[in-house]
Image 1 (cartoon, rainbow, N blue to C red):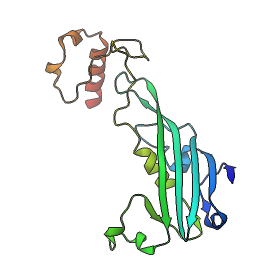
Image 2 (image 1 turned 30 degrees about the vertical axis):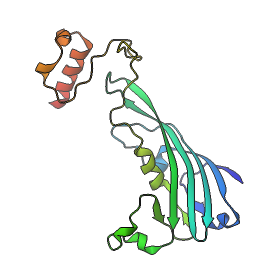
Image 3 (image 1 turned 90 degrees about the vertical axis):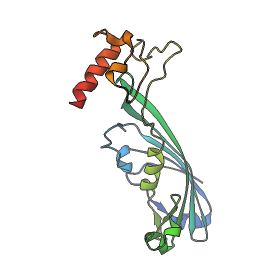
Image 4 (image 1 turned 60 degrees about the vertical axis):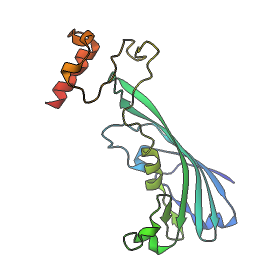
Length: 191
């Protein structure tokens, strides 16, 4: 059975799963996953979810994928960059109340197993966490073989993290070079 739905809050009724697995193809906005205030990434494109839910006894298995496009400044040229995100979903929901008190039952801590009330599943938080794990730490455009930025069409100096300004390559001393402009911008940001 295939359901095409668009909701403002992800909610799955488990009663429907008793007759067999259900596959959902869903399009959701970023506000569903509480991602509108991320300081490094902008999420303004829809999230595509393909999820199959099945029930074994009182345990619900959710399998599928979640994908979207995030926008972030390129770590090389600072131009806006579209970052494709895709995560595999494999989550188990159980009614075991011990899952609510992992301080008392630390052996039950499992990132893929969560408590639900027996009637409805609200997986937005778990799906958000899966997708956030896919975010690159330093998103950057793909340079060609000559280190040319495809966005600005200029040669980009190699990234060196933690190196002192004195260690910068001599070729980047021209104040009009792209690398010199980036260093100046970084100094301004550092205060």
